[in-house]
Image 1: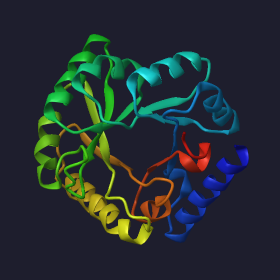
Image 2: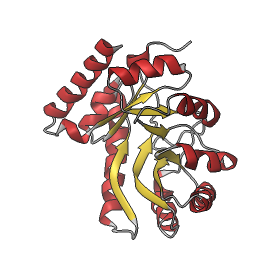
Image 3: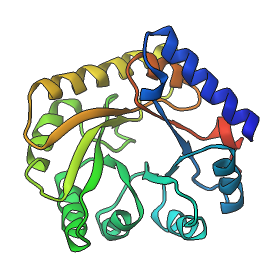
Length: 227
């Protein structure tokens, strides 16, 4: 696993250099959904510092089992409001906030434990009915409403673009999210920062980095094919 991880980190570095970016501004989120705790421990020992999980219950068990490790846990899956109270206890960053209803519930639950929950807004950049996320044209309105919630801190945007087995076909969607991020940044909405762009996975993360990704979510290239 150490070799695979080193290979990915080298590719991240090369992609950054190729477009004149500092590779230190790009962080790897190792997607550990469905991967047993033992394998996740191997990844941490190999140098992984951020783990991405899709399911609250599964993540809770792993976080407990690996509590002695100083790693950051991110939630990257679709989050239902009834799981908000668990999510704010478990995760440093939630990538998939996509509605005011969920935002209010996260805010309420974070307030109970005196936490400012960091979040990203999930944008359905390809407007696919099969995917979660706010549509591009509705994003600013949602962010302005979330800006009034005291226990949430919006850090940027996340997307899962349409699937193509070719990075160059996905690139326009990454560029679109970056332009949206810049547009929101220029709007200077109170209590909102737009530092993070979570986009790019095993098959297309280099294109995502070239288009401005700060968080790339990579699972298969680190852990191998899932069962």
